[in-house]
Image (cartoon, rainbow, N blue to C red; front, side, top):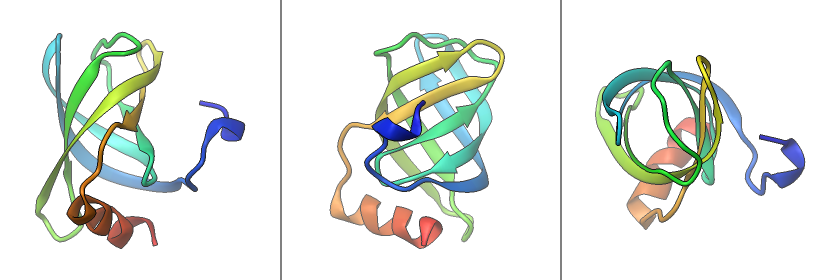
Length: 99
């Protein structure tokens, strides 16, 4: 994902995630995160435009469940996910990590 398309600053993270898509459930890791989206390191396959359910294990141990749309896919590496709708509570939780 090109930096010029990003509206929100991304920060490097290393957080465990679980995601569900058409190919099933997968354990993976986040490598970057912003209020607008994230990059999921995974060998699982997705297609651009797929809607994904993503659970992020936050630093406090709680799971934050979000939904998003696949923006990019790199086979064997992972995918970029755009958060399609965030509640105020979800935004607050994400801000705790990306500050």
